[in-house]
Image 1 (tube, rainbow, N blue to C red):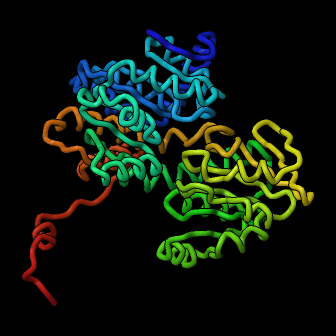
Image 2: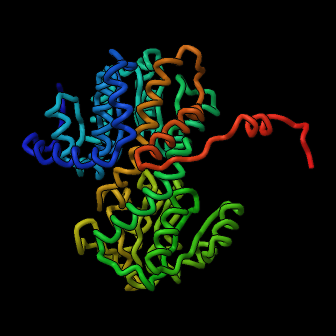
Image 3: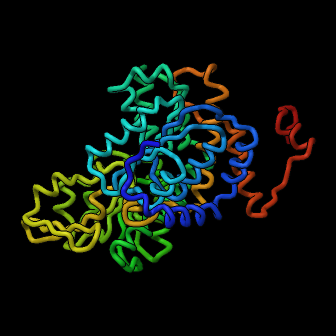
Length: 417
C-alpha cells in the first residue's frame, strides 16, 4: 500500500507499543471482536486524519476488522509517533505521517489520504472535511459522512453547517459524553502536564499556573495543576464558566492582569491569539507558555518574534525568546499541542472510550447515512451509554437498575407530595 513514513525499520518497536496500549483499551477490543464477526463496514473506504499514536493504531485495526479499507494521515505535524506509523504501514495500511513534517508535507499527506476516495472520513481538527469543501468538492458526493474528534473541529464544522455549506452529515464525536467528560477533562488534564514536565522538568508545587479557558479541557488542566500544588488562575470570556471556576476554588481574572502573576501559561480555548503581544510584555522574566488547544494559533508567535531580539533553543521543544526589554519568554513545542509533541498524548485507558465512539460512529453512519441531512449530529445517547456500560464492566464495576415501579414513576406526572 502507498505510504510516506520515516522508516519501516521502526515497525517492531511500534508493534510492541501498540500492543501495550491495547492492554488498556478493553472497550474498543470488545467492539473490534464484534466487528470481526459482523463486518458492519465491509468494503467501505475510510480516510483518517488523526494523531498517529499507539491508541489510534488500535482504532485503525478495529476499523479493518469491521471490513473497512483504511488510509491514515497525521492531524498535527508534531504528534506522529514514527514507530507507530511504521507498524501500521508494515501491517498493510496506507500511512502518510512523519514527525516534524513541514506544512507543505502535512497538506500533501492530507491529499494522499483523500486520494483513496473515502466514503467515510475521520477528522481530528476538520482538515479532511475542510480540504474536501475548499479544493476537492468532487469527492463530496461519494462521502456518506464524517466523524470529528475535537472541540476545535466541531466549531469549524458547525460554522460550515450554519452557513448552509456542509455537504454531508458529520457526527460530533467530541460532543459524546463518554468523550468530552473523560478524554477532555482527565486525558487533557494529565497529558498536558505530562508534556510540560517532560519538556521542562518543572516543579509545579508553588508555581502560579494560568489556565486560559475553562471548558472541559481547561477544567482538567486546572484540576491536575491544583493537585500538583500549583496556585491556579483561570482566565475566561464566558461568565458562566468563569463563575464555575471561581466556585471550584480558583482565582479568576482577566489575562492582562494574570500576565504579571503567572509562572506557567497554558492555553486550551480553541481560539486565535489568546496570548498576544500585549500579554507577553506584561509577563515576568522566564515565564513559560504552552498550548494544549488543537491548532498552533492560540499563542501569537508572530508577535513574539517581532518583539524578540534573540531566539534560541535551550532544550528540545523549548525555545527562549529574549525580548528587547531583556525579559525572556519560553515557548514549548512551537505553540503546538504540548501533550502530543512533548509526550505521548492521552493515556490509552481514556482513549479507549473516545475511539470506541469513533468506531461506533462509523458504524452508525454506514447504517443510517441515507436518512441523514448535511448537518452536525451528536452520537445517539444509547450508544454513549453503551460505551459507558462497557467501560464499567471492564473495570468490574456494577451499577443499580431502575425497578419497573421507578421507571413508571419517572414517566408519569400524576403523583405529587
